[in-house]
Image (cartoon, rainbow, N blue to C red; front, side):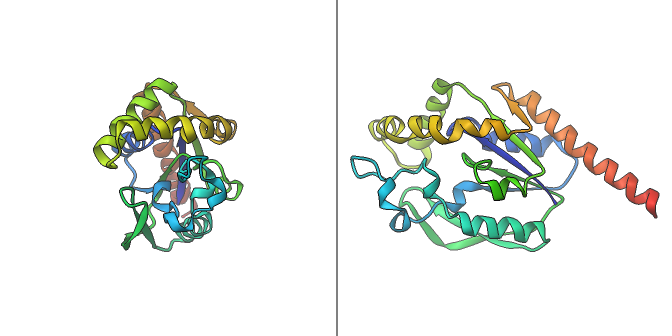
Length: 212
């Protein structure tokens, strides 16, 4: 299994980019989102809450890293996993899970997909989406209002309290680990990545035929 990590700030278009790659590739592709591994609110470390008492969802401590590492290793080993389902309206995990089976290629996307050294070691290709702050904020605002039951004022407050400073401190530095960086023109980047995926598997198939 080839695992491709796609990182970038909130609103940078990671999920959209991943779907573009999926649609342009000839290979069977699975998708896994870091968002599924948010800790339930009651398990988030309170020392990383904001001064106003709100949880910091843009800090690395907000995620269940041990479960994620275990799941990625299981997928690498050819085993299926039960992916948690996170409810952003209640900030909790539901009782249901989603079964994810291994595939030749998996796209792993999330704000911190390139953050952890152990996880980076499991990634075959590392991508970082670099999108200007005003575009990211507009996209985040639209998403939070439509999908997560937030208000304009709460989204703006969260942006200045946690999203913006955490981007500077933790998210943007992930660029140094990327194999390539994609700007706002994601169609071109998605085509390049899909072509690379197809090339890797074409070479593997030819090598297997030659050996046999």
